[in-house]
Length: 541
Image 1: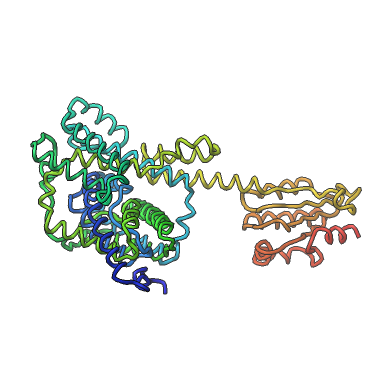
Image 2: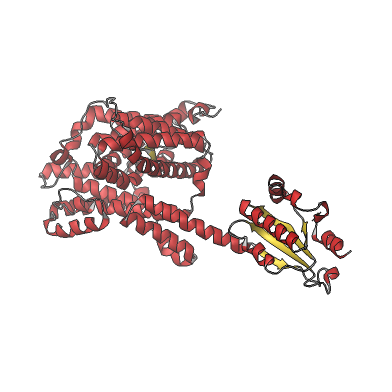
């Protein structure tokens, strides 16, 4: 069946104990998600409810329809920079349109079984843009971390740096102290969590947010809060609204939608693979993509933001004892209850503390160790990862990924072409070739004959013998269309110069390619032999 959610296969052997664990895990992840949803929404420039509604609706749909047993979906830090850029350039209505379009792209990717192709994106590209996004997230939070008086942060990197520099003298020492205290508490909580006994089950982000809110309220600290800047969080349920759709807008949203879809696919499938390792299971990547597509197509009609699989919340879910998608549904239900009954309490949450939380998330999101280990890798890997990182930071994620894939593609072609080689068959190995050099020449080709390695055959063309040319293709594992065209051109050149061409050891994929291209009709029947020895015997008979 092409569409089968993992939930349907999760109830074999399911019992009350597993259900209890799923409920407790869902409650824990729901509480963890609350501060993250808030900081992601604020950093993206959307309404406060957008992130929470996304976690509730999109997160619930991903758990209900997804291909992973324990993955938690919702708003993710990786989307912050892209979403903020789309909102600044095109506006919120077009962000909703781009999100819905990305949902269609994701569903089609899953429908056409393209889930496995995402795994072929090189790790250098993934690390480069992940670290670039993490850096930009941290940069975007400097404003609230220091309490700077900035009306609106620009999206361009250099303008952001200039804006921060010009506002440096407006920093709020109270906000900075609160942010530093929050960040310190997060770090210490993580370091000493194993020694906290039953308190270890409480997430550090929630503890930090609650303590910062209490301190701000008791001492009436002069810092910006959710209430002073945004007026608080609405406690009403999300309502369905049609999003404005027009062809004029849609054509400009194709590129942003593809970026959202590609990033969502990468994030969700990487997250699912990590979850597989934790629970020793295997997810269904195409089902996961279709679920992500449905969630992202649906959430814009409720004013939400793009959603994907989230690694931190998924790991928390597993560590809390989750074993089925029930925990993800409980996580969504928990957030819904919080919105309905506890939303007014959020108005006193200080933005400086949320900025510290997001900086902490950004630091853990990046794979900074890869930069330290760069000297261990070859120059092409270093160029790719650094190019993607700097292009993500300075220009745009889409450009960064395109350039990264191009560099990885060129590197791959070079590596594969360098593995392909052509060796002259020597008389010491084949005695019957003794004193035949220039008259009867034999070559043994290894590797792949593709567009990046056709120079092997072109060198042979420049040094044709006078009587017979033998090509041993026994060790050729692959021939593409360009390689076959070059081989046919060589055969045609041999015919013009009255040189007999003998092909030896043609098998497997090269044989199939020769049959499809009708290569056999270009040469006489006695031009094909199973191995080089029999070919040489025929040529020297």
